[in-house]
Image (cartoon, rainbow, N blue to C red; front, side, top):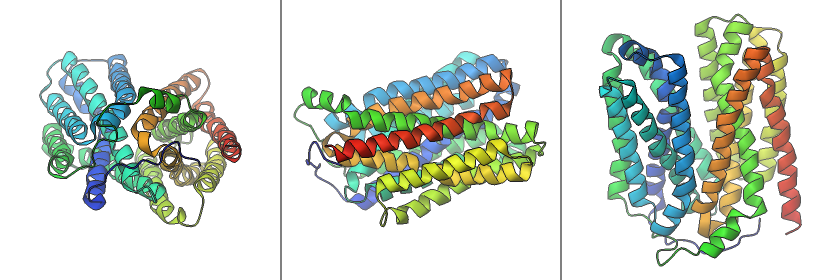
Length: 393
């Protein structure tokens, strides 16, 4: 892919900074899983209904979307350090607020803080990893995705294991303390200087925001984010209600889906050494399409479970490797380009599971899970458009 600019920021030691980015994305994984995992306990402590619970998810995602608009220009203009420190504190503060909340309005504020802080950690950590390893962006971003998976698994695991004996509050306090780990790393590490410390070139940034590659990759991740949110959110209910797996078995399959995604990202850090980014994305999308068809058409819980794990393996490389394509093309404005990408991607992540729920209500959960099949086809078509654009530039 051609680069609009070859300017690289002055880099501090990449190893410790990569560790801080991994810590930040680990905490973002906790953010993505914590609200759903703690809802049953919050229902007991505070009187609110499922519709109001849905509002909490909406507000958290909306806050992430808003933060995704701003984080890129901010880190390109002012650098990463202060921004990532502030986002870590926002996440920690939200956990404390969930811990002490005694009314629904406190939960609303906590959900907003969680979304703002989590959205900033997500975008900032990915953009930082992309900048640290310009020659190995795909491997770095896939590595980052592994730590996201660890975070997403950690909170449901801790709540399931310890809540009955300790209650929710000590677990939330632990989550708040975990969010201080990236904060301390961000505080004491030396970061690269801001790419545009002497003024943000709005004209060049506008060119990038309008660039076809940004929008093609953004909409590819619109469909991919929709896939990950839809399968992660609905597959256990599908297995339990439609195919009669026990609740425990369905939960184990969901854990298998996340574990397969983590394993796939670990494998992808090796594959990017011998495969082009576009080839890896295409192979992953084709595998995802096959797995999505197996999941929807499966006549038994066993076959659907196989499809669920296989689709996690297929999904693994698509998001981080697509980000690598964008980071390679726009190294001097990676934050700004990632802002556009994440706004579009989060829109898909909010829309697809909502639409799946509407289809499930009107028809069946099997109908709702046709969405990943359609989305995988769209990803393949968009990838061909990206490759065609690359050949003509």
